[in-house]
Image 1: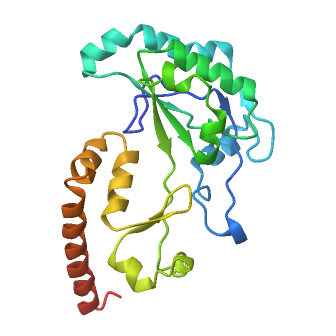
Image 2: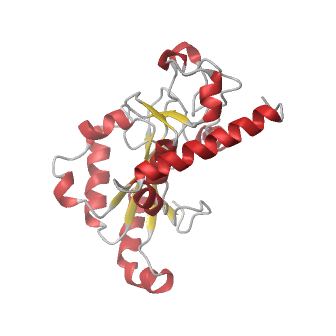
Length: 240
């Protein structure tokens, strides 16, 4: 646990347990887990075996850390003008299938008790969120958590067929941003930027400004025209 983290988008980190298993892609394709810093930490520290092994719950004294932060919320607010942000978990996945359900229940109870700090919950398994949340999540936790779902980037020059099943050519992808969401649906152009802003702490206002019903058609039009010009410039410059 870090009282003050060096990660720029959070203030503190909390790990209710440590350990995780890498997400595998079909055909062993590149994955966002390929360069996992937490796995490297596990190998250096020897505190837990990474992969398909038992997770290690952190100590009771460690678990009392967020309660201390919560009690200091007024001082933090006066000093920084906002609530403390707590990244959970930097060395695990909150919605890991292999983590004991009772540990997750204890974590959610801790989140409920610490009602004066904002929790940033990290997961690469967004499909598990709905089934693993407490039944009363909507009524009891609404101001206390933020999602930090992992975004995975791919170099289309190295994987030119990554979106071939959507009918997207290499030039289509070079012309405009392309992405798929957690449900596998294709998102194109300005909508990708808006989706990324919504997932990025501190940039939600950009999504609200450019992605609202009134502004969105204009945002898409301007993005498409600029994308066309940039694509033509790169073609003319023989960068592609």
